[in-house]
Image 1 (tube, rainbow, N blue to C red):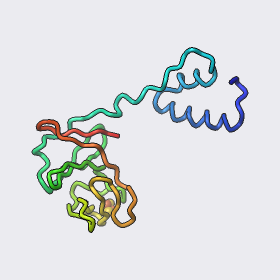
Image 2: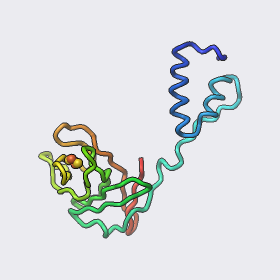
Image 3: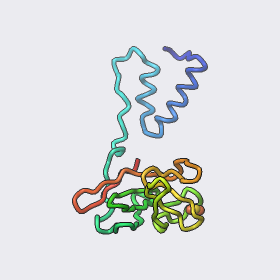
Image 4: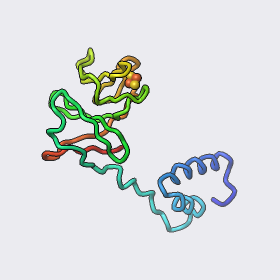
Length: 156
Ligand code: FES
């Protein structure tokens, strides 16, 4: 592979470079692409923060059938407890940014825990972030776990 890339290859090359540039890996990828015979075969390393659990609250801060709002690295996160299980959703409603943690907890017709946004009534399943009317996963959800007496989330 030299500097004369086929047009379609250039498109792929450009799109991958844009993606990798966001993650600081542009230089590594470019070297591999332009020098295929090189013995340098380093793989793009995964984002080191991708699987990082972040301590966000005490376990007893989230009561059964209740919720709190926390801000983690600039993300507003709504933490819920329903039937003893913890859930973490984007704290800003996908509709117009309403405070999801101040919504009403309930169950869908299928028995899944859900929250209804206090502003205009959009309803989301807590486990999936699916909007219960149009069945689209509109609300971000985050992995959440209990570690001892603390709650941790991942910003993925
Ligand atoms: S802002 Fe949540 S339903 Fe409109």
